[in-house]
Amino acid sequence: MEFSTITLEKLERRATLTLNRPQAMNAMDGDMMRELAECFEALQQEKDIQVLVIRGEGKVFSAGGDIKAMLDENKPLNIDEAMVYLTRIVRAYYQLPMIVIAAVHGASAGLGFSLTLGADIVVACENSKLAMNFIGIGLIPDGGGHFFMKERVGTVKAKQMIWEGKVLTAKEALDAGLIDYIAPDGTVFAMADQLVGKMLASPISSMITTKKILHAQNLSQLENVLALEAEGQSAMRKTTDHIEGIHAFVEKRTPVFVGK
Image: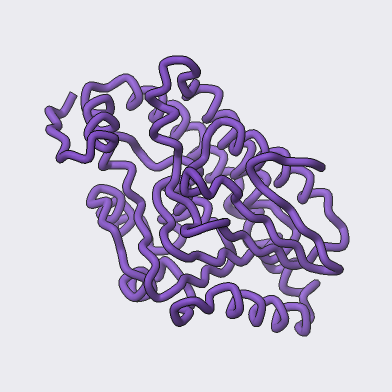
């Protein structure tokens, strides 16, 4: 399977999926969303791969959704189409029959952070920045962000962290329970490789079966969250605050929100 915005490499029982739009800080445009959906759906049928590592090419893991694409007058982002892709991505991602490790360097923000939190194990470089910062452009988390945040920290804390949209250091994210390991600067991929080796030297079929059992209990809740995120995000895209938020982001100024 050939892709233009991501790469998938397989080696015996492991695979590495790399977000590959480094010129755009691996921001997810419509093409990347479509390719991620196709990739995860194909991996759902994989019989030999037991560990998947997700990483980003270039300086960061992912800056999130492609905000510039939201403002592109020639090819504007179709939010309803995007939400269909995101539903496909997350549904397949959550049911992958393998252990998923997210290796984060640089930054993981917005939709990129939703993808990070959906991994079974998250290791982040000590100087990385992590943020569920949809609120800064007048949007709600998507890509299952509500579900994955709640799984990690509980409902009350998830609400507060989503509302605040704070950019967290790796230490703050670890203390909050959002990530699992911190790697010294420049060693995140080496630490991910060590974790892969540990997994493959374990009775990993048992581990994957436990994942399948636990995830099966939550699948209907995830489906409901994805439907509500699609409905809510479509509505938020039409708000005055969102339009102000994305213009302020591109213009590098503080947004002025009016609650509409």
